[in-house]
Length: 163
Image (tube, rainbow, N blue to C red; front, side):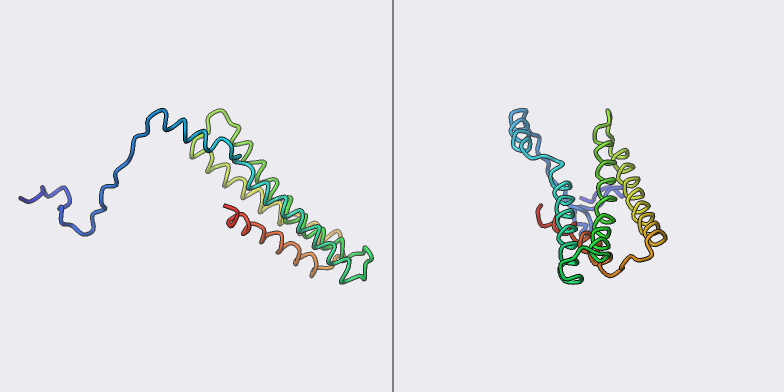
């Protein structure tokens, strides 16, 4: 017997198989919620920011030791500023997401809006800080600044491994 023309044929290889779903009882849901209650949603992003701070300080120390022979100079400040350019926009982004999470009614569209606006804030802050530093600090050394900035950005990859 053939299926009606408006419905896909049972032998159709392109048809997606029906995936069964499970209805949880209230006890099972409570057990699942108790398992996830101990895990904080905010630990991973703030852990990445803490790692970025540590990497920025380490970059400044390396610049101090290897470029200046242990003296604090423009190389050290440049490396530290590169780390700050990587850290401050990430903090602004996370604060934007936490404000959205604290909203009375958070819809998926509202969270997506917060995510996109947080990224816009992050990109704008990064570009503004680079331009401000370029115009206000002529003696800035770009190699340590960019190296530390890039290394602080690579801390996001650690977040993938922590998951």
